[in-house]
Amino acid sequence: MDFLKTISIAASGLKAQSGRMRVVAENIANADSTADRPGADPYRRKVPTFERRFDRELEASVVSLGRVRPDQSPFRTRLEPGHPAADAEGRVKMPNVNSLVESVDMREAQRSYEANLNLITATRRMISRTLEILRA
Amino acid sequence: MAINAFGAGAYAATQNLVSLAAKKASTGAQGAGGAGDFGGLLKGAVEGVAQAGRKAEAQAMSAVAGKADIVDVVTAVAESEAAIETLVAVRDRVIAAYEEIMRMPV
Image 1 (cartoon, rainbow over the protein chains, first blue to last red):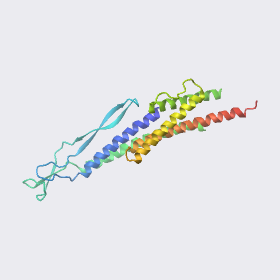
Image 2: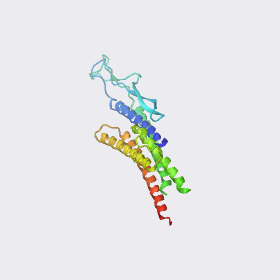
Image 3: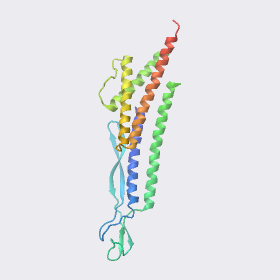
Image 4: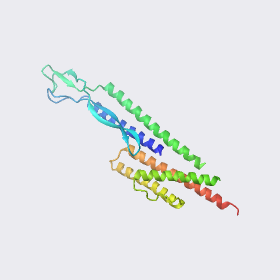
């Protein structure tokens, strides 16, 4: 039945967006995770990717969270000579996480999740409205 | 005749339900009622609904154990709810039609 397929497809969207939220949470939580010795790299921001997958049981394209890739942008540096990870000039490499970017990402995941939820709600309403024809 | 048309509609609805449940659980075409007698059809439909219910229950149990995704639980429960509501609506209509026939003065 198409309605139940719709619900399953939207559910795949929900799962993908919740995985994205997990990645955003990792990034935000590790925004200050530096290395513990000079020369080592701090936390590198992770970027979630989404991929289209053809589900044979549903006979429809669903979305799933693909590989989580590292962000290749350079690390920020901060002058803090007393830090255990400071180099000879007193600079500490900080993670390439920008909390503004992360909050925008989080908001986007939230909106996308809500869009999929609305789809499920609307589908369920269509099913029950159709069944009401029999009840009347 | 109205009853005839309704019977065909109910047949189609329950048939869909059965094929859906059979596809979902992939336990073979058990009780699909291919011969077209109403008892077999109803049996197949009820079995399909029961299967959907069991699936939802299993999902809920593994969610309690902390193993299942909440999204899987919600979709399984919603699917079984839709199947049960469809079956109940069809059953109510069939019974109503039967009672109407029984009230007919002969």
